[in-house]
Amino acid sequence: MREALRGLTTRGRSFLAAGAAALLCALALGEKDLMRVAVLLVALPLMAAMYVGRARYKLACTRSLDPYRVQAGGSARVLLRLQNMSRLPTGTLLLEDRLPYALGSRPRLVLERLGAQQASSVAYTVRAELRGRYEVGPLTLRMTDPFGLCELTRSFPSADKLTVIPNVSPLQLVRLAGEYSGTGDSRARSVAVHGEDDAATREYRRGDDLRRVHWRSTARVGELMVRREEQPWESRATVLLDTRLGAHRGEGPTASFEWAVSASASIAVHLRQAGYRLRLVTDTGADIDATEGVGDGMLLDHLAEVKATPRGDVTSLVEHTRRRADGGLIIAVLGLLSAEEARLLSALRSSGTTCVAFFLDASTWLNLPVQAREAAEHEHASAALSLMQSGWRVVRVKHGDQLPTLWPQAARGQQGFAVRAAMAETVTMGGGR
Image 1 (cartoon, rainbow, N blue to C red):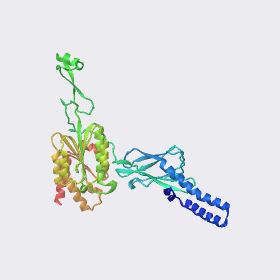
Image 2 (tube, rainbow, N blue to C red):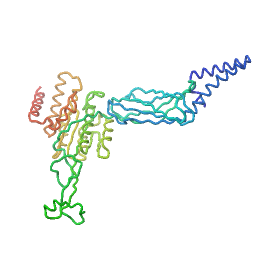
Image 3 (tube, rainbow, N blue to C red):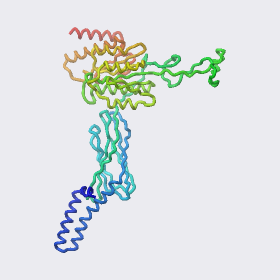
Image 4 (tube, rainbow, N blue to C red):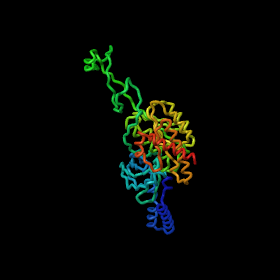
C-alpha cells in the first residue's frame, strides 16, 4: 500500500490536498455536507491506490519473436501477450519494451481495459540494419486506474534474443573441379551430390542376408552375388574468413569487412544447400562444422557476432586450417595481403585440394590520392600473382562488386595465361616506378 501511495499521480495528490483542505474547513465551520465532500475527495485516490496496487501483482506477460533470426536490413515482429490473472479488471496499461539503439526507439503501446481472467496481445515491428545479437526487453508496464489518480510501474525481467545475421545472397550453381573428397570402397563414375548410397555388388559371403542377392549380376557372373551398399562420397568444403583488422578498410555496414562476412555467409549457405559438408575457419581460432544435424544456424549465429580483430594473422589462419586436413575445396575471403602473406597461404594448396580466393582490394573502400591508389593496386596485384603462381584461383574484388556477379569466376578464377601475363606486366611496371 505504501508503494501504491507513492504512485499517486498529480491528479491523485491534488485530490488528497483538496480533501484535506475541505476537511479542515468542515471542522472549522461545522459543515457536515462539506465533511462528506472532503471524505469523498480523500477516499477516491486511496481507493484507486488500493485497486492498482492489488491488480499489479496479477499480470503475466510472454514475448515471442517472429522470426528470431533475421537478415540485416530485415524486420522482425515482436508479439507481447498479457494476461490478467486477477478477478478485477485493470485500467489502461502503457507498455514500453526496452530495445538497443540498433533496433530503433523504444515502442510505446497502449492497452485498454483488460478484464478479469482475460488476455490480450499487442505487436510491434523492429528493423535491424547491423548484424549482431540484440536483447529485446525487459518490458516495462505502467498501470493506471480509470480516473488516472494512481500510476504504478512494473518491469517483467524476461528478455529475448534477436539474432541479426549477415545478408545472404543466392548464388548460381557452378562446377568447381576438384572439390570432391570422401570415403567409400570405390569412386563414383560421375561425382555428384545425390544424397543416396551408391549400389555395387560383391561375392556372396557366409552370413549375408539372402534378400540382398542381386540376381541379374548372379546370372551374368555365374556365382552368387549380393548387393553392397557403399558409403557415399561426400563433398567437403572449408570457408576461410580473414578477420584481421589491418586487412580491411571502411567503417559501418559498408566496410570491406562487412562485405567479407556477408560473402562468407552466402558461400557457406550455398555450399550447404548443394550438399557439402562444410567447415568455417577464422584466423582467431573459430572452427565450426555445419553438420547435417546442426544446419546453418550455428554458422550464421557465429557470423552474426564475428568482429575484426587486431590479434589475427595469416599464420594463424593457415595453422587452424591445416589442423584438420579435410581436403576437398577451400574458399577464402581475404582482405589485404602482402606478398609474403600470400606465400604463406600457398601451404594450403596441396594435391586434391582446390583453393579459391575472393581477394578484396580493401583500399578501394577509401578515397585515396592517385599515387597512393597506384601503390595500393601494385601491392594488391603482387599478392594476387603470388597466390596464382602457387595454384590458387583468384577472384579480385573491388568496392561496389556484388558476390553473385563474381561467383561464376570461382570456376575459372581468372587463371588464364593472358591474365597472369597481364598481372605480371602490371607488377613489373609498378616496380619500375
